[in-house]
Length: 227
Image 1 (cartoon, rainbow, N blue to C red):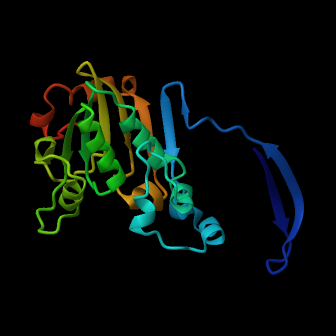
Image 2 (image 1 turned 180 degrees about the vertical axis):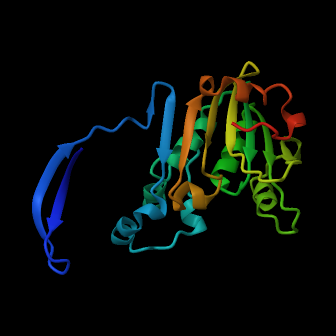
Image 3 (image 1 turned 90 degrees about the vertical axis):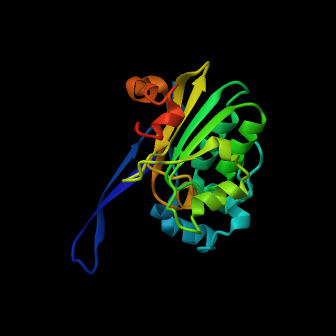
């Protein structure tokens, strides 16, 4: 990638470009050697969003238009996601029958992710989910779980609710934690496509002690461990 940096000088009302530096940079792949880092575009790219899409508001029809293999057909949603939502969906979709997923969620309303988890259950993946419940009648997490038809047998309300900002999915193979999806984004359309945050997918070996604490005793821990 080639970049140009210019130094402007002179009167504050009439800057002149006096010096220019041209240089090249090489970025790392989003997923490389067992580790991946995914950034959405979100509001940090608001000017580009305005010029590209004229600030067209997202609709549920646009954001929920996701294929079973994790592709985002809507160009605006895909542009904002910049691979973040797709990577999360691939992480779930690649989980095979007999393997396991342990989900701990704060905001848990992005239906494509919830539906991907439901499909995983249907194909024989051992899925267990701990989520935050506000205890309100119109709790958005409960509503999304019901809409995605996730069974009550796999969804558990978090019991320790002070600052419940856990956001991760641990993959189990043979009952052993081997990989984790974690980061700063919630499982919401706002975080998948709308906020300038990142998510990280990494091998379990990066946090071996912490991830191993939420293995065999999962439902009992009720998400007491943090990655």
